[in-house]
Length: 302
Image (cartoon, rainbow, N blue to C red; front, side, top):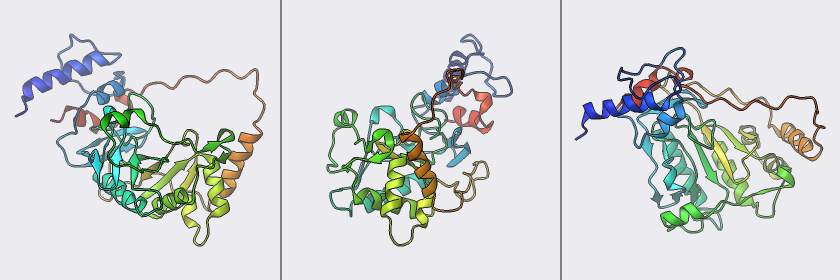
């Protein structure tokens, strides 16, 4: 049985110690609000399990949290969760269902036994300690480009092996490792009505624009973005009945292929750097004040 007084005291001390505006000697109950400068990623990254609340994505994909998360089992008939030490195989129930459904589709493709699943979300969502700006509400999942040929990887193997880098020429083109099965998997994901967006490197989108046949409407959901050359990133719509979830903007009209070609042209012929341009400022860490107020309840929940 959970010792609630001790847990509450521990959380209070953690909230105070991890934030820029708190003190480890402050024993008052934490309350987020304007000016609360405690760094959110430290607090959410320290949570080992989900909140004892109803399942709900809260806030925006890059500025939120999740209550009542469920865990994708580490191994299933057609998937394995990777990098278990990160404890990021948590998400909303709709996301776990989607990943399992997509893995069953993957298992029907030649050379694939299922999926290797990368980062989803932390147990209570929120900003991650490393690696992502989004994945905060339990509605994002990274799917490895490496075909899952073995589904009996040990925990150690899942830490050591890497996915396959599919990009060539800094992302302008795909490598020979790209196969029709990759396109079929992305098509299946994009055609799922639960999916709002899929992010992949520009060369992959441009390649699919050249080879996709039949109904090409699914291409609209596939968007080029940096850093998605070893995995593709699936983002789901807010589920019905979750008013606290900030919806993704609708995809622009058209199939997005001209945008992908422009990305490729920019990679191959980048604009000259402006020597007088100031260096970009580092992205500031999100604080508790930056998140919806409900996220304090998520942190404080058993």
